[in-house]
Length: 495
Image (tube, rainbow, N blue to C red; front, top):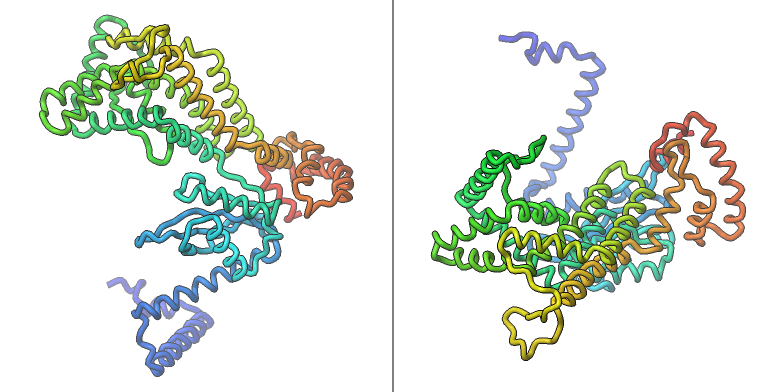
């Protein structure tokens, strides 16, 4: 029916050279098939044959990757993985710079580890290095996931590798480190842990059914109408939209910030929905709802609500900034410093302001506010056995200061001085804005981090060479429009 698309017409259109090449390829395929059939190899569906084929492909692929790595410097990135049989696996990635100056990351396999101790992980890496003919003398970086089940063992692994190769510095994703710092505080502090458990349960119970979510929206809309009629509604773009409680994400701890904002803004409606659940459903869910109803209408819950909102508000700005793809190292480190300074200022100066904020919220919603000078009574415990302390001591020292200090300790541990200085020095190589970040002394300091690569003589010569280098770069049009260190490396190889 369509002669132009007929197979004979298509074949005729091909050149004699293309037809000959096709016939050669077809003949070779037929000969290979005939050879395999004659040898009785008809077991390609057998698991053993499939595994042989897969293993052969893996060896060829890894061999090709390692041939590209050659004798270059490289870094390793390791993460925990589990297969369907719940066996611990160690996934490994190599990161290096190729002949063109491009940054290359290559997944090189998953290795089963019978034990998840740091020694066992180190042995597994040693075994891989030996089979791949890689040397620790060329290792210049390592990175592990601090949120995994094996995070403690990864810390031990990091130390073992640094003993063998002191120049294999540990560097981790800034945004992820911030998340881990927040998680660590929540897990180590029983009060904060309990607070977030209550907050998450609140979202789950209120949002457990369409009926409850609709009731929450309905009450919120009624309040908006009432405010509009009384002419006390603030209007503007993005305001007064239909909303509900925001559910926190599992992988992004800072998503709890949105949850806390939702609870504060919709607090009276949440209380009403919980009361509705208690009145309408005499079952297990009503018991949980009643427990939440009592817990959230306490000054301690409200205090933690505003305290964690303030802390997450400071770190949320940093978290969003660190996740930007165009964020440079110097700006990132500056943001980390700013975050620490803001938390320290809050610790030293803003307790009374936070108490006042929480108290006004409690007065508005008929929640009893304790007198700070009175004795603090632990709920459910006899005063006779309870330690003597005032409410002021409890809320300022044990809650406010303790939580912020824990957050600062975690930030200092994860953004330590060595990695901070290393990355700040490295950032001086950035070609952005005609090499405005260039700093000779910091680059000399960067060289001193790698004594195996730069001798004292090399460092002395480097001081003179860097002046020539930056003058040449700034005067060359080829390097004037570069944005990052990776593009600089590619351009240097090209030129």
